[in-house]
Image (cartoon, rainbow, N blue to C red):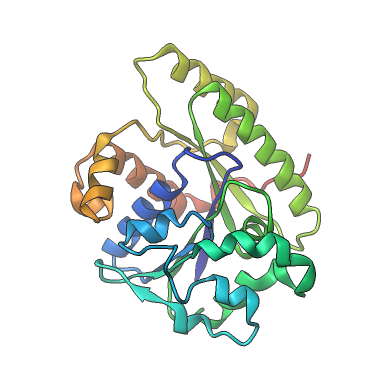
Length: 261
């Protein structure tokens, strides 16, 4: 079972879109896929038709109850082979409770070990804040994707994320492959072109070969309640994620390990 996390310390850069699109493509390949929502806003949960404000059981239960079985929290989606571990808005309370509970940084790693034989891939959608949830995602994963919108303010968020990643990896006992994913790229605008140039200059070989374009089909797929590759498999955005998935699957060994600065 491979565990991939999608994280950045800035919202609106395409984290949930990346999780949903990659998960859909993997499921359509025949892989058994689990998507995990660790964000209190519950965008991934809402994508599949559930209200994070009214969820009676969610990933939150794994943090507050050490005896909670992860398998009892899994929910089917409308796509075969794709399963959801939903979030609830109660996840926002984790930071206040962190000092009262032991082993809070290892909850997801332990939970995923329970369902190791059930899935081929796990994709984790992380909140845009360095806290208990994001640390759990970084500890549990073996591959980190960092989406970054190709505009200047988003680049600053990526720089913050890289510093936070350095701090987390100093306490992690294994290496981590990490890939920067440029999103919302518009080759018609000078801002996108310049931003991409800065990202590549700063992160070099750690930048994905694929560029995720602005594509209204992502919004249309969300409105329809379908993963983008099912809604329109020929959409430019879907094709870009398909190229990314090729890099992640066939050229995985070429993705560099994150080196602590």
